[in-house]
Image 1: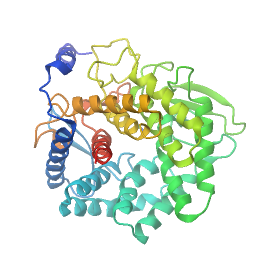
Image 2: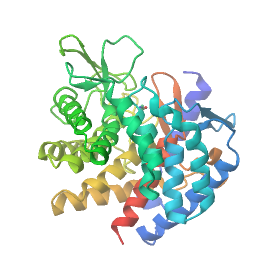
Image 3: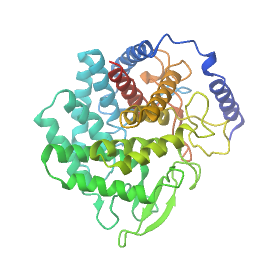
Length: 398
Ligand code: GLY
């Protein structure tokens, strides 16, 4: 690593590590914190929408070069910006946010026929799923049904999984992230009465539960299958530090995914797994005091390495939901942990000043460190799950 880059990293790490709870300004209470965080989020996304180039979606922002990076609608993160706008409209009733969501969803809607990605749950359910939740319409329902049909074409009954990627060295790769795309399928069965979507989701989750998880409830990132026999070929990583390490966001996807599985099926095996993943995350010896994980729990450069605010936000949102399904002791542990995460993310260490950061709310996420991409940057999904967690907390405390 270049010496200047190394120095900058060291300074950032010292800055983040130095911000312990006792040093943070005391917050009067969670409700105040939640409302002021959501209020700030509305302002940031209003700022971002005013500066959005036409025909594209936001992806990230680079502080150093002040470069706002966008993506086409086919990129896996395209549902998060409209999804965040829906949540923020729900909070503020500011119609300009809803109009902006509708504008970008016009661009996004063609992806309902995209059969080349497993990310349709992220792309279409975070956007149109939220749109339909707030303003049910036949048009949204048709888009969501077509998206579920497209996603289902990637299911292989021999492997018992939905295929993740079409690129790379693998024969039939399945990544832990794919658990996040199943909620769309449950919606499709509920809406249409066609149980095939439900069966695909359950089969995928069962296969993943069997092959992706280790004894300590951490998970591998990529499991490669032989599509002819269904046998596991390899268990590796792509975005984590090592094949046997625990990539932080992967653990958060697993936690969120199996919490949704329990909600949608009431199968206790999913609840047990979600609780196990929660314990792995919350008790990890490498988890910093502010509860924002490093990008991988096992990277040997801890503490001189990058955090992943997105993993923390996903975890907080998932734990708030999981707290509703568990005994009183676990439930209060989960809520307390989520509160700690939300408090940390809402400090100036992680929350950008208004009008900065390209309009993104959070700083310090890590997209793909081994690929040298999106390191220590804002990311649309960090913001989306942060906003979702704030909204969940607010709803639970009413
Ligand atoms: N699904 C890709 C990621 O989490 O980076």
